[in-house]
Length: 275
Image (cartoon, rainbow, N blue to C red):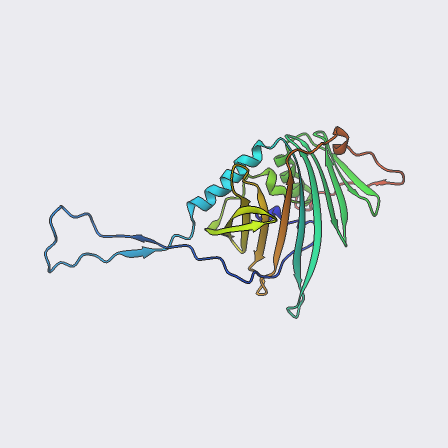
């Protein structure tokens, strides 16, 4: 879930929360061998119990799997994300920036993504046959043939061209590509209200990234808020994403196809040099 931040628009981070989440409860494990049914001699002291802290709560990881399973059942949806994040200056001062993204989705292979910030505007369209990236301010567009599903599209664009689709992990959760590797800490941090919706709050650590996700309770476990903290920077910059869902949008087929406007210029997708 870490790549769910719109890193293709800008480098994000966000002001730290004022309250730290509660610590996970340690497990107590007895290392004493089972007795034969009769008490040990008084002179023989029983081995002391050892307290072992297990930082990965399996229930928290299962909540991610349940969220992914539900996301995979959504055949058509519209999602809007408002992102705010910090940029850290060399003297340690933090500057807050904002961006937004809107995705129209029809599984298995149709997508329209609109990404906006004060510095950048980009549209991406995929109709199951061709993917197009359009920059409306410059009137440049690039196109490439492709015929995979949305999870495959996400990986192809990232690996081949270095293009990040906003909220890309929405297409990965519930599949073998779900980013569940390298979780060194996972905990349930209680419940919160996110824009009127009761959510379960979970916190995770993966490598140098800490991230938190708020998942709606009940039969529709949708992610509603995401916070990412970069621990490689001593300033601990963060990004905050608020996610709004429409599960019954009216989406026309034309929304996923691109017609070049007058004056638009075709430019090639440039593969990464490592490819």
